[in-house]
Length: 104
Image (cartoon, rainbow, N blue to C red; front, side, top):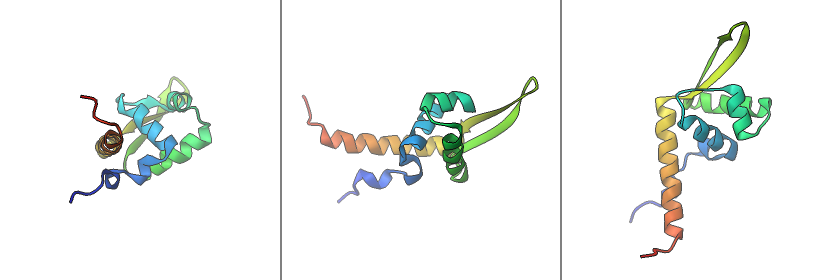
C-alpha cells in the first residue's frame, strides 16, 4: 500500500501567502521585494514575516543592496527551496488528479 500524496505536502510552503511567494519566485532568478509584495497582494510586514519563515527553512535567500542611493531587497529561491516547491506542487497535483474522473 502506497502512502497518500498528502504526506508530500510541505507545511512551511502550504500556507497560502508562502505558497504564493514561492510560486512567484519559482519563475525568476530573483525578484525585488516590492514586486513580490505587489504580486502576492500583501503588506510589507506580512511579506517580511512570511519571507523570514521561508528563509529560516532554507527555501528563500534574501539579498540587500542599493540601486543608486536607494536600498533594495531581492528575494530568490535556494536550490532546496526550488526542490521543495516542485515536490509540493507534485503532491498537490497527485491529490487533485485522484479527485478528477478520468475522461478518456
